[in-house]
Image (tube, rainbow, N blue to C red; front, side):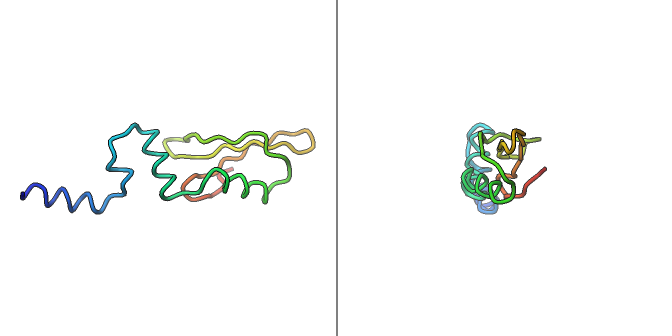
Length: 92
């Protein structure tokens, strides 16, 4: 019983995505779903900031951090924008 109390106390302080026994990719998806912005929200944010038509939007990771990679085209030029999936910050 004494062993469960410290373990339970530590578990209560950690986000659920750190406690699940899933692959890193699944853990990141769970973390984004709980704490971050959706892919649709990222696309809308990029549409508001840049002109052009979104041609592709995917989720990936950059140095272990979940990001959305959004490609749009405007006047024949393709632009790729990276959005932090947790904070919504545009990274480039």
